[in-house]
Length: 441
Image 1 (cartoon, helix red, strand yellow):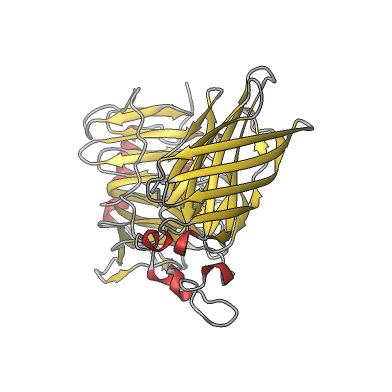
Image 2: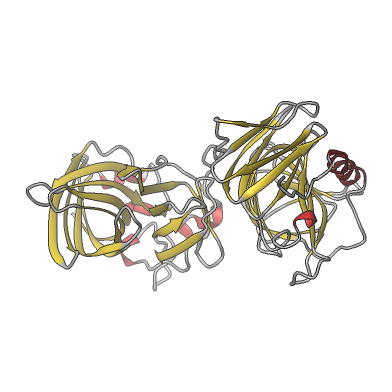
């Protein structure tokens, strides 16, 4: 029989009861910090004092985080991440981590309502009994993992990696990689289900005022909104942005993942933290100039995403662009990778032209793929707001499909994700690229 940290059902129920009744101990060192908070996110102490939470705020055990209409991501001192969905209440019952695994470390949490996605940290890695997440329906323990919980009158969730143990008074259930669970109520035994719990991101929020392009100035002190071509961004893009384009390879086919208008979050150094509700496991930033950011990341299933994200183009700026044509030069791109996530080539050069009045795009691209040169000419029409798709040929059996987005005041930047398919050459690749506008006439 499998050994578990919840060998006796009564012990699991007792632990849940203790956590609910006695959420605070005398240990008050910071347990976590807020990596980002969007909307009206608050923390309530054990004695009922409430405060608004913003990026960088410290959290201690005994506090309850309420996301209300917003969302938040917490980073615990042991390296764990917790991403909280809108309308969630989450309590840090007990937390202790002294920087090492000596048996005193512990993480006892409660999800009072709503949903979360988490990647566990050091606590619980060796001493499984020192970690659990409680609800009134069931208690969850770990074996080192990434998983979700959706909690209302029942609970459900999906394990992305590792293994969890879902327990209540009716029994325990081990849930491993890719499996989903459901518990109808506290008197119902946990069961496996074929229905995944993929927590959706909230509706896109407007970018914080601190990232308005009008606050960037050129070397003469003039606002970038007036002279965008003369501007160099003052800092890397941080905070929450709301535009993206991305490519993934899934099941041997290149797919466009997500949708334009995703919520994309960067830390103080301009590094990707959260992509449309996904917490990256590994990130390779290729650039972030304060208007556009691009790179690759892998998720808990080792799925590789090539992405571009950036500041939106103000709607009023399209009228200014009128019937003009913008010319964009390549800043840089991500390495072209195949379906096994192996790098197979490099984007050497690219020129993008956007005819704003006609709503068309033309792109000339040159790569080195598997040691050989490759080029393609792409065209697209139907530019809708900042987005357009383009298609082209790169040889007898070779084709390229691209999604293109415009970024920043007066569309001074552009981003692209693309896939290359050559059945005869027997290769398939995906990549991303960022562009800066070098001409407008």
